[in-house]
Amino acid sequence: MEPYRVKIDVFEGPLDLLLYLIKRNQLDIYDIPIALITEQYLEYIRIMKALDLTIAGEFLLMAATLMYIKSRMLLPSTIEEEEEEEEDPRMELVHRLLEYKKFKEAAVRLSHQELLERDIFVRPAQEIETKEGEIEAGLFHLIDALRDLLRRQKVEDLYEITAERVTLRDRVRELWDRLQGVGEAVPFSSLFTPFTSREELIITFLALLELIRAGILRAYQKDTFGPVWVTHVATS
Image: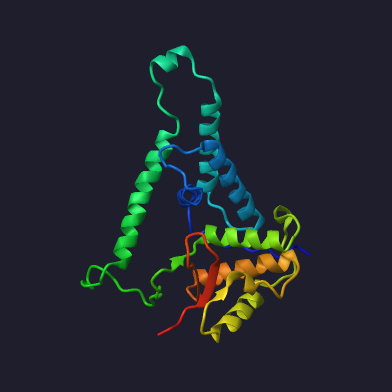
């Protein structure tokens, strides 16, 4: 019998991950410590593969780019290159990140703009209300929260996980039933307390991702890189 495998599309890209790592480590985007970022980036790739998330080719291409830049920076400069002031191999990546960051911030501003012209800005079918001070938790925040949980519970090596004989559909229904009648947000960690095996922890995480992607649940933080909270999205 083949193991039950789960495939959920990743809804953030490689540049999002790099910006997340830069912000989390409080780094200067113009002076990225490429060895550190490459190591952390590859760790996230390994975790996403262990979770059986569908990783787009762009993630692997960026991994190759980071390793190439790292190797370039490890090579000793020749006298000719020093005289010609060889361009920093990180600069192309920095320009891409700055350009992406600019457009991403513009998209956020537009999403919060007052919808005055319905023929230009289309109102979504359902809006998720965000209270002041709340920070939406993305995929990488959730992966960090799961990793912290696994460390606290001393679960075995994450990278060897294979989810077998665990039904994603049942776990999705359980989470939905559990949070539907709860008026307040609950800590991320509380969703995993009844489960002891690593397979149950991982399938619960995947079910949570599916419900967030469907707009049924939302995850947020009250402080930057603080604990993650999960709540049911009220329907109108």
